[in-house]
Image 1 (cartoon, rainbow, N blue to C red):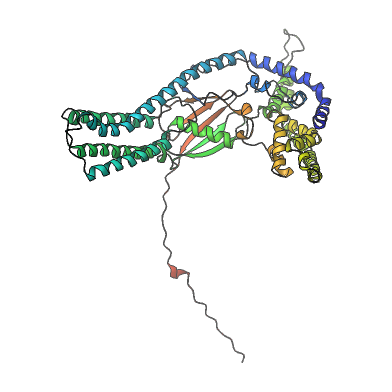
Image 2: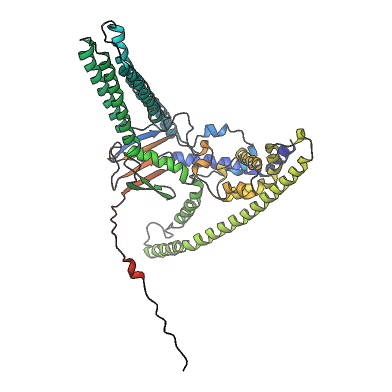
Length: 526
C-alpha cells in the first residue's frame, strides 16, 4: 500500500499536462478526419486481403486500449499525441473496419468449408481400405475362399501402413492455420483433387470387378486393398515434396522496405507463390523490424511545415501596382532562409542527441540505485520468517517510484511512451527481480527499440493486411516482381530478385611448386 501511495505521489505533479495532451489528441483527430483520401481506382493492380485469425485486436483500436487498467496519471503524463497520431480514427475508418468484419465472416466460412471438405476426403481415404476388406466378409462370406497365412499377414501390413499414413497426415495437414490467404493453395488443391480421383477410380474398379461378380478370391481382394494403401503412402510422399521440400532451396532474394521510415530487410525465399511469400514476409516482419513509431516522424513534418510557412510572399504596394522587383527580392530572401535549414537540422539533431544521452545516464544511475536497494531488501528479508517475505510484485512496486521519473523522461524524449504502460513496466520489473537479472538486462527493452513482437499485441498487432500485386497472387515468384502489403498506418514494399547463377572453376596447384631448397654456404676464416 505504501508503494502504491508513493507511485501516485510521484505522478501527481504532472497532472497539469493532461488537458493539453487531450486537446492535442482531439485537434489531431479533427485534422486527420479532414484530410482527403486518395482513390486507387485507376490502377491496374489486383488487391486482395490477407487476414490472420479473427480473435486478435486491430492495430490502433482505441476501445481496447481504453480498457487497460493502468494508472490515470501515468497515461496522462507519458502519452503525448500530436496531429499525426496513429491512434486517431475517422468515420471512414470505422466504416471500412465494419466492412472488413463482414468480409471476415465470409472468409471464415470459406476456411471452414475447405477444412470440412479435406476432413471428409481424409475420412473416406482411411475407411476405403477397411471397407474393401470387410464388404466381402459381410455380403458373401460363405462363398469366399479360406484366407491363408499370407492373407493374414497382409492384415498386419494394412494395419501398420494405415497407422503410418495417419500419423504422417496428422503431422503434415492437421496444423493450426497461421493466416487466411486470399486464394487457395494450388498444390494443396491439386493433391486433394488427385486423391479424390484416385480413390474414386479404385472404388469404380472394386464395384465392377469385385462387387458385381462377387469374387471369391479373398486373398486377391486383400492384396487389392494393400495396393491402395501403398499408393496412398506414395501420394503422401509427393505431398511432402511439393508442400515442404520444394521451397527449402533459396532461389530468390526479397527486399522489404517500410514505406514510412525506410527501414529495410533482406530475406531468401524458395519457390513460393506471391501470397505465400507475402505470408513469410509478414512473419519475418514482426520478428526483425523495429516497432512502427509514427512519433519519430513528427519532428521532420513540423520542421517542413515551419519552412513552408516561411516562404510566403506579400505584395505591400497593393494589387494594382507593379511590385515584381520587390517580390523577387522577397523570394530570394525566403530562398536564402530555406538554404540555411540544414544548419537548423544539424543543431536540432545535436541537441536531441545531447538530451537523450543526458536522460539515459540519469536513467541508468536511477535503475542501478533501485536494484541496489532491492539487494539490500533481499538481505533483510532473508533474516525474517518465511511467511513475511516480500514477493517480486511488491518489491517492484517498492522500487518503481525511485526510477519512475527518470524512465518517464527518457521514454518521452525518445518518443517511446505510447508502447510502455505503467503496468507493463511493473510486470517487466517483477520478472527481472524474479529471475535475478541485472539493471542492464532490465534497461535493454527501453534503451534500444526492440522488434515488434516485444510489445503488447494490442499496440502493434494488425488484424488485416491487404496484398496489392499486378501479378496473380497464386503465381510463383519471378525476377523483378514487386508487390505491396498494406495495413492501416503504413505499407511494406517487397521487391523480388533472383539469385544469380554462380559458376565456380577449379585451378590446380602443383604441390611441388611450394617446395624450395635452402642452400647455405659456410664461410671459413683464412
